[in-house]
Image (tube, rainbow over all chains, first blue to last red; front, side):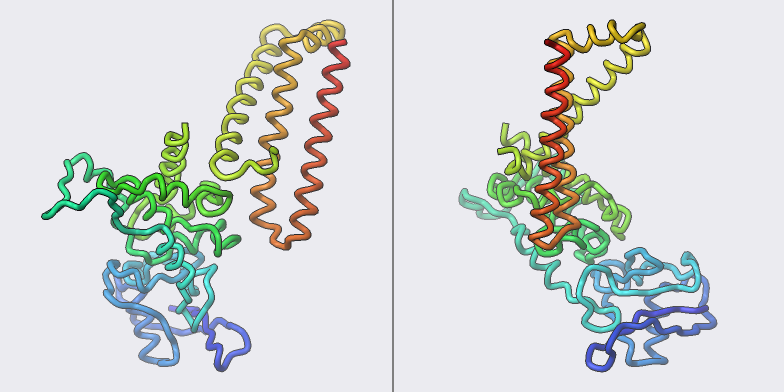
Length: 231
Length: 112
């Protein structure tokens, strides 16, 4: 099995290049992360992020054959060969498959991803009805891997100003939360030509999300909420 | 100023103009299928009737507004150099305003 991996070490290489590795005896059902670890055992100069190995932490997002995936939950047998592994697009490469996610986290921080209340908080806990809690399903599960945002052309063209699908999904997660009392401020912070409205409903984010979430729907709901609150 | 419409207002305006254009377009298609004009004089009579002329004028205004917002979005995405962006936006603006004024003039002439 041939695996072609994007290599770039800024201390040594003048430009990135693709390196081929031959991996034999790859058993049925093996995940791509295990293959990458196998390559690392042969060539320890290869760098990539990984942690939990079961699609929970979101550390090992890479671009495989043109699609952003989590390598730990991507079965090698499902991939067309030769397998081409690159870092996630649209972000500066630190080394090999490791990208600088500062911009991504900046956008995440900028949507204030936590409950904001103006009234005194309850002494013990906030109570929600099952219906209120249901509204958060499909929103809170995001693991911040970056697959969606780095698959979004609007983010590629305006990475500094467009918040990106992951951050906007989180923005809606708190707008949809009945316990949060900062909806007006949140929506006001997203108005303007760039932060929210660069989204052209391309839906690459939906296609890329390894957790099966739908940021495009959340963005649509933000726009609807903004419209309702302004009329 | 129409050039300063952005964010939610631009998004809303683009959708409202789209809905209006769709309704107008469907009405025109139905008219042509149901009772198409038999001569140029009859066609001119239909177009120059005040309600039709007003709706047609609104259609072309809506078309220009819709196109302005859409093309501006494209230019914001793909043209990043400030001077070039201003130039392209300016050209698009002139073309759209020019075509709208020209079409309004044609309709006005047909009505008189």
